[in-house]
Image 1 (tube, one colour):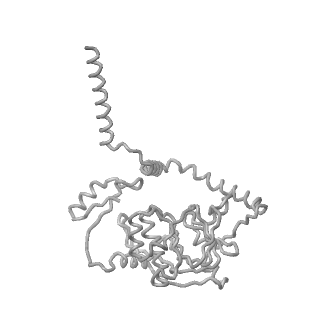
Image 2: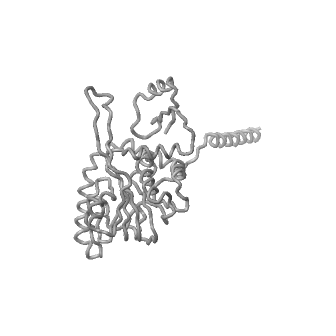
Image 3: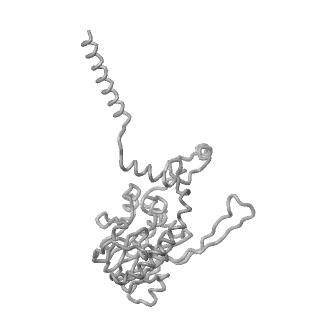
Length: 328
């Protein structure tokens, strides 16, 4: 009797273990490194405000590293570059650099503020858009790139950094990636924050690629196009719409540094979205397709930061007005 009872309990235990295993499988208890990294990243972004007091320590630490590098670097063959604020001004004294203006300066008229009384239209100036072709460039793909000329000048407006070009990591980094040679004519579209960020990809990087395309009407005159991205679907779709050949796309990051025989850069605009960007993106989206009018609202409900406090109420009002709610 005891043996029968023990066997019955054993079978029950095995069955429970099997059921537990099935439940775990059905609930998809799977550890995905990508999902874990995204969860950690989103948590850190939500809690980023707590670390703001630590920011004040970053610049003093960088300044100390820079001072040490300036003192010791020459003994190891390392020379700190000088900072050139404007590529256009630098090109005026260096005739080997080709400069082409693609779009002239434009005035952007801003409507009155929607939530403030007694405000009127304001005007901002969008700078001209240029293409620069620079020979013998050393290019480091960190953040938005570091452009070093043959005479060791860092071109500030083509070398953005989180703390500004004057505090670019190239001034304080002890070890830079080893430089690799890239022959031919290389187009460079590396843009700050464009990797994995839809807004900066669409509003900052894609217009620069449009400028690069504008120079030759296609990409046949470039041997490669350097980009920073996450290989997301929207990146592939926009690059396909731009007509960029897949074999010419080369994704790069801060581990990549190149010595380039001839590099072509598109200028960057700051603080204002130039009208030519809007026109170019509209043409890109509508080319070859019939006009289709849809009312879309991109929800931020799933984003890590900058959520809208009363989004549920807003979404309901928009649905009543035939908006489609899309989650970004």
